[in-house]
Image (tube, rainbow, N blue to C red; front, side, top):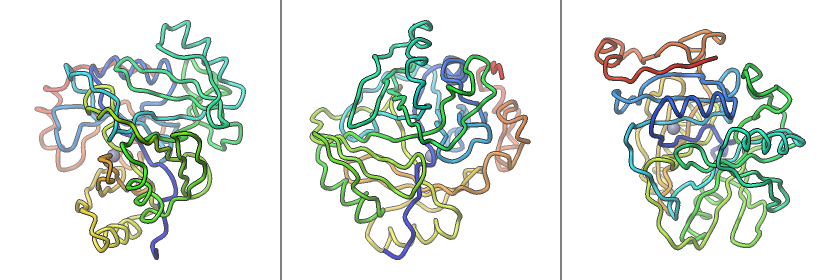
Amino acid sequence: MTTIAPHGLHHVTAIAGDPQRNVDFYTRVLGLRLVKKTVNFDAPDTYHLYYGDTAGNPSTLLTFFPWEDVPAGRQGAGLTTATAFSVPGESLGWWQRRLAELGVDAAAPASRDGEEVLTLRDPDGLVIDLVAAPGDARSGWDGAAAVPAEHAVRGLHAVTLSEAALEPTQRMLADLLGMKLAAEEGDRTRFTMGAGDGTAVDVLADVRRHGLQAGGTVHHIAFRVPDRATQAAWRQQLLELGVPVTDIRDRQYFTSIYFREPGGVLFEIATDEPGFTVDEPLLELGRALKLPPWLEPSREQIEAALPALEVAQ
Ligand code: ZN
């Protein structure tokens, strides 16, 4: 390998139903910041909502395509079946009480491979793990009304891929993307990349039932590279290794390439640059509907087709 490996998770993108219910859950219940309200660039009659820390830094981002009336998906092989966020080491008890008070579908914290994990489901059934991570250096979003800064969600911690077989996916993660095999416990194998926070990919192997991608499931996961030059080098390398990969797409806040791992999960490599303050100031992130320049001429029709959305932050 000559190209530097991706250095962490950039974002996770999932499919939701009602956009208002989605905003209410992630901003009011989990206390993330809505850092961008835009549309799906490939289907501009639907929202694309980005949640993250104060500035929407890579490694803190969970994004949604909310399609009203989307049928429920089914977790299973070929999908990312859990998205883990880190919270401060002593905060899981606080989160457990909060989620119970709010009637959120959540299990009691449990120990898993040396980590304390609280698993919950969002209103669409998406599986979110809160993991106690005492060493996490990120600060999260300290502006949430109902979540004190000391308990704030810090950012992505890990993703879990469910796979029929470990080996083909392992070859892509380790041999091709340069991740390290960090731990093996039962049917769960952890790979890590780079250094710092939000750098783990868990593979659950021997999952028999095939997943169905729809409401409440993850659409794709994205890994970080610093800039477009590194991304272009990655694209070239993937092509040379025979991996079908898309052209470079302009996502306004980063650029992206997409390819599939052998088990079927859609991977993206996204740049850290230019970030979410490229089209609105830090203090105003997420307030206005933002469109990329090529969709701006159609703003009137786009706004008319989108459901109203109330964001309290
Ligand atoms: Zn993406």
